[in-house]
Length: 58
Image (cartoon, rainbow, N blue to C red; front, side, top):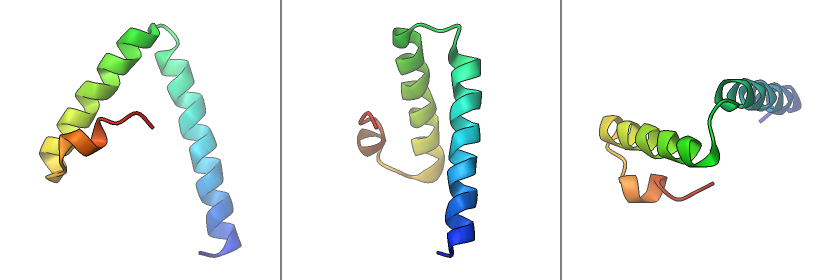
């Protein structure tokens, strides 16, 4: 990957983190984990990925 591509991906990661923090600020940690688990279940059902692999915390 070219340095420009790495820089662009880094910036995208920063923007996603900031937006996530803003949108999830009203939730407590338990609610965030519930949301994460449900989102991963939906993703796994759509992408034919094993949900057990996706359910591991990052």
